[in-house]
Length: 106
Image 1 (cartoon, rainbow, N blue to C red):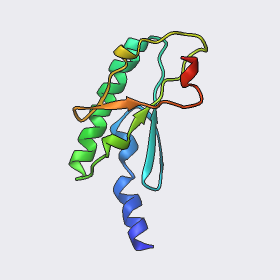
Image 2: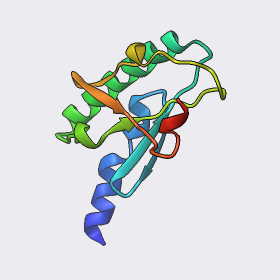
Image 3: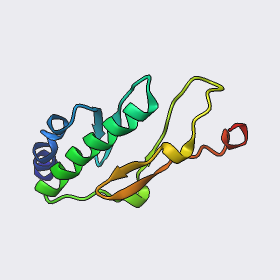
Image 4: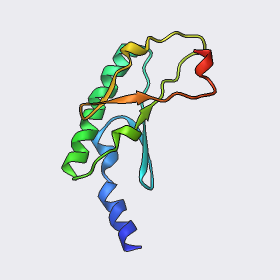
């Protein structure tokens, strides 16, 4: 139990490093953001991810960016140019989650 308590103390201030809505469970986490303007959303998320990257660096922790994905929720039928959706964490581009069940609808 002491190791778990140490871990909780270690990550307890994570949510203070960003204004993104964050959720943490065990060793997994999610960040959420919204904006009506896609370009502004991408800029905002990338700035906040840089703050998170700095927090991880300061705490001598790392994220496996090969396992990290983002998902974009939008109004049904609204077209989005995937070329402008460049999300970056610590100079590594984050891939977009592709749901196999919806891939044929895009």
